Image (tube, rainbow, N blue to C red; front, side, top):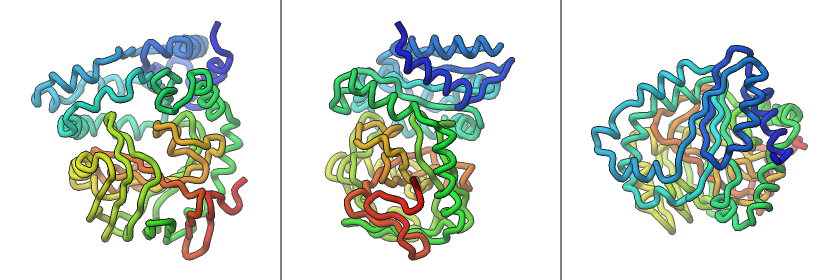
Length: 357
């Protein structure tokens, strides 16, 4: 019997997140573990007179690909994937992690090569108006979160099954505040960072791109970032955990990057391309139903009372000033003494935003 919460989530995806219409072709990427949810989504799509296009991955393929692909293959542009992206009206991407460390033994330079090649495809997908991503609760994710699968399922559904229209109205308050703001300052232990957001757009995130959702984001003026920041949680990419990250910025650029764990990997990613050493996103976590770090960025960047910055690519909808194949989110917990100032006015302290409820 299908979990009734999966049915509710399928309804949110089809009727709210990607707004399926008759005649649409909808790409669904997933693994076999997500079968119950994918079948519910497919039923709803078909009932609308639309076409589900299911793309199912298999465990271990990414490791085999990166281990054995030559540089010629890594540099080959995925024409078929681009054709599908251009000829589908919506996409629903469902992660089904079975081994979160699958790529930890792969040379990060190989992944960097592939990221550069597929950047055009990634940008096309990101700039489309009709996509959503989700991480299906698997044993691998539950283990990383140090929970039983049952408890992790509760955690996932409780963070997703919200009144997203109501959340959007609440987030709009901070969006409007960001639009009136010129300068931002972040203060905390071993953190004092300032930057401008003058002229940048801010965007609320209430279930139409990520699931779970619950953040507001914008981007700094590229060369305005100055100061230093120590991040609270490991930044995870390519199966590697980079912990104890401290970054120093001068005129927007990372001039010193250290970490207590996997520092070499951190610096390899920052050197991926010229834009990788600049910040492309400033985000504010507003999902107060997510209270703990679970080593999955889709959840962690939404933790109520946190902020995050992404090194690399900026989103077109906020201005898109910084260009890069990298987009790497790093999270700062502000719930234990952190302060955020907009134009020298304190707007957040200890993770609580004034006027947000």
